[in-house]
Length: 372
Length: 68
Image (cartoon, rainbow over all chains, first blue to last red; front, side, top):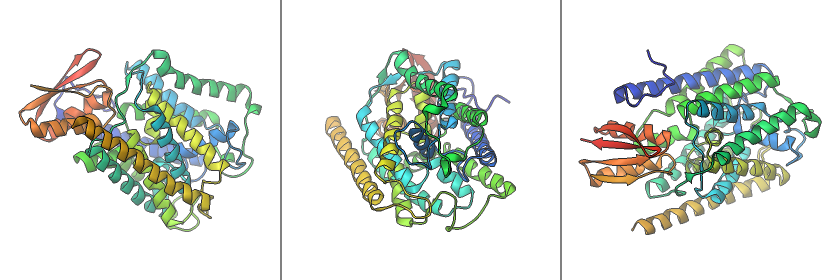
């Protein structure tokens, strides 16, 4: 049998490709589920083997961009994901430097996605991991995520587009991966430059080498399969295509099995790790994440992968997320575990959703007028 | 044959444009793409709705031919 992670368009029937795409995604999802459980066993916070939002936030804290003492650590998983995607795309000649599709709007959308994720306490990937750990608050988040995606799909179907990107210099495409390498080198050579949590989630982490390796593997397989937490639901709504959702489903199933085996499965709403039960805000936080992810063309994980493949636009979206994380903690927008969001977080969530809707509406209106 | 240029558009926009254009041109069309995701998604969509799709390299991207 041919390598299921490899896509052949020229040499096989499309039915073959369809199945192999789904199988590849399911295998990737299974691997990510297992790796996530392993990272928790080796020290990562519970239900947080991976969380793109949390890990970007921790990294922002380590770099003094915010000074919330419990969420500061240079997460090697993030570095690994970007580099895994970069390396495999260069090796497979898929590295594609391009940019120019509404970078400032992408920065703002990335910023709001991060606020929503930090009000919910997790990116879409962690939402699935939390579901696999029995955290029912994540189910409320999932409902919000689906709502946000459905709204985004309505705009897409009516002509929403952030516009074309254009070929860019190789240096433009390589700049973001290079920055992550620099971050890792400085982290290894001069850790005293960074802030590190002594308690709380930021203090909990797997060994650096394991985290980096886990990130590299996840980056590599996500690049090959184009795994995306938002894309699966979006494709079902828009074109009844169930390919991408298989990755999402496999992550859930294998995290569930892994957590059951590791004794980390606890079903319920109360006392779930790094979470809260303010249902309305879990829901609305993920509405912002779902809508923003569709507008960006992919979830936070997918943005990291695309940034590794040479997309300057996605790199800007990730920088927006990092800025959003810094603001979320500097201005008390992020929820605190158990207590939920404060007033600032609630206002920011509603305002964020309104800004996303305004951007989507204006862009869609202008595109429709242009197309006649 | 109708041709649409989806180069530089991020997923799933090429698929949506293909879907819309097929509605008005049921005999088929050519789609130009330069993104690997679109190269895979556009033919997959076309096959799913009963068309035949073939892909050839063209100018640093791909031409997806969608026919009855």
